[in-house]
Structure formats: structure tokens, C-alpha cells
Length: 346
Image: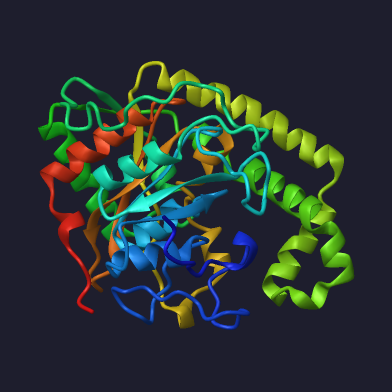
């Protein structure tokens, strides 16, 4: 049963802002800070303990970003696993919908209820749905995880406190019997440009008529982002899709020998609304984008806090339609740590 509606970024495309049409969601760990988007209220409500689980959309990280920033769990399942019927599109070929909860087990139960073929969504996958909780507490000993090391240093790199928490999480996995390998970072780094190009073109295609006839009804930041999509040519879009095919193949090759790819969820923790600059986000690694481009499942779980008391997230990416293994890895990490048991003082 749905018990209420929550805040989100406008059309899932607005940056964090205080001047939108509706009041913004604020981070329960510190109300001066953003929650991450675009499913901002979904992350905030869970961190505040207002509900058992929430729904989010995810085109470039909009489930996993608020999960990371708010210290909760959230999974973007394989493209086609969860129906998007009734969800306003942002980018047809990148959009996902999925659950968020305060722990991995609750997230698994939510995903169980959401998964399955739906003819109302043309991209819905007609594949069997396993029991995501059947082996949730199984051992991860013997599993092999890949870490794209150079990706962590892309651009301005990963925040040192985030990096330290990530390295500690890798040691937890080693202690649980998993093997950690460095893998090729190139396809992950290369994902950002085609992902950005595709989302711009497809977002403009959806909003084209409205942006032409009712531009004043959009927040100025969203309006400008949508209009940028008009500048993407057909050739640009086709080349981005060609790049996507190559990136998918390269990451699929890595997944042949690895059970998961692990990384931080975000390169930076949540920022204050007053300090938030969208441009700075393009100067650091985007750990969430590749899973949207490939359609592979990706889970975020809490893995620490920075010196300001803001949560840090760990991301686990898995093989197509193997959410069960991704959740099992997340559960193993949760069982060995207590980050998910910490809650903000309200």
C-alpha cells in the first residue's frame, strides 16, 4: 500500500536547489545538506524512519545517490526487471525504477514485490523472477570482485574520506573470503560522455512540445538542461549509442570472470545546499552512470561516515538479472558491519 508522496527533483532532471516549485527534501543527518537526487524525498523519508520502504527512479544514479547520501540501501535492478509503467520518462533507454529501504533485506522484499513482466512497459523483460531472499545470507567466500582503480582517480578524483571508507570495505570483503582484483577502468570512465549525450537527447524528445509552449512552467535550471538536448544532432546520438554497445561488451567481458564490480557509490558525500555546484560533479568520477548505460543491476549500501557525520555509500554492480547475487553481497557486508544500524538524531 502506498502511504504518501515524497519530494523529488523536478522531472528527475533538476540539480539540488532551494528555489523549485515545491520545498526540497532535506537530509535528516543535517538539514543544511542535500539528499542526492533525483529520488530525494525517498532517501530522506527512510533515513528519518518515516516508512518501511520507498520507490525511486534511476536514469544516472537517482536511486543510489540518495541511498548513499542518506545512509540507506537502494537497488537499481537490471533494465526491464521492474516496470516503469506510469513513470514520467526522462530517458527511455536509461530509465529504471526500483526500491529503497533501510537495510538490504527490506530492499530485497521490496524488489520481490516490484519485479515481473508488465506489457504496459515496452522495455519490460519477460524473464522469470527468482526468490531474492532464498540465499540472501549465503556465504560470499570464493567470489571475485573487480575494482576499476584508475576510475577512482578520474578528474579531481575521489574524496579521501570516501576512498578510506571504500578501502575498509574491501578489507571486509577479503575477511569474508572474497578475492579483490584490479580491472580495466576504461569502459567505466568512457561511460559518462555517451550516457550524458543519450539522456540529453531523449529528455528533449519527451519534453519538446511542452518546453516550446509552456517554458515558464519549468524551473530555469531544468528548462536550460532540457533545451541543451536540442543541440544534440542525430549523428551525435547515434555515435553515443554505438559507444554504448562497445562499453557494454567491454564490461560484459569483465563480468565473465568477476561476480561483481565494487566502487564507492559517489565520489563526494552530501554537500550543503548553499555550497552545491552542479559543475563540480562533472569534475569527479560518476560511479553510478555505467550501470544505467549497460542496464546491469547496482546496489548501494552504507559503508561509513565522513568527519562531518554525513553517510558514505558502497556500490555493488552485478551481472544481468542476477540481483540475487548483488543483494547477497550487500547483505554479507551489512552483516559484518553496523553502518546501516546508525540513524540520525531527530
